[in-house]
Amino acid sequence: MIIVMGVPGAGKSTVLAAASNSGYRMANYGDLMFEIASKEFGIKHRDELRKLDTSKQRKVQAAVGDALSKMGEKTILDTHCSIATPKGYLPGLPYSLLVKLHVSQLVLISAPIKEIIGRRKSDTTRVRDAESEESLSEHDAMNKAFLATYSCLTGAPALVILNKDGGLGEAQKKLLSIL
Image (tube, rainbow, N blue to C red; front, side, top):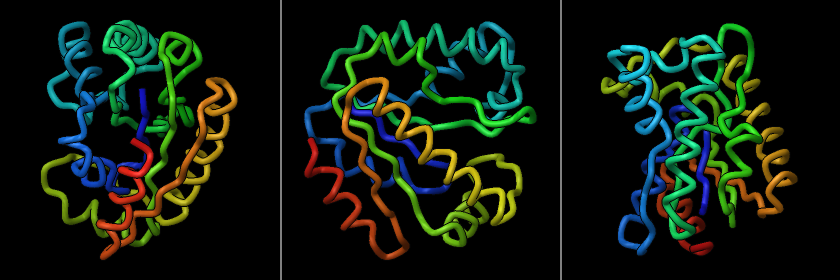
């Protein structure tokens, strides 16, 4: 399994579009979490996931881990490296989930913070909390720390791909080079 992560607005899904015909199965962690959380806890929108209390998020993550462990090695997982919650950053991939998966590569999609803010403002399909540059910079730094930890836990190589405005083709090319 290849796991592709980043903060909301970094362009994970856009970069991943290049891999749609690669022979890999595409899975979106947030979609899987929403499917489970809507049944278990009655949430109505995917963006409500990060507002669930930590114990509920862990329960949903465990169920997602079970589903992902059955998907096979030729899967690309689109997810968040960490989730900013009112109590702090929650690992997007806790150890209890990682041990269920056969991870061959970890990828963090990043972008300049000002560009992420601009992308978020122009994305009318999502309900996102406004974040300052400082807060987003902190989140991006936390993601890099979590990425290194996930690499240590799984033994999988970690790669950071910069997805700057105007550089989508280069970011996609770098992703395709590891498939």
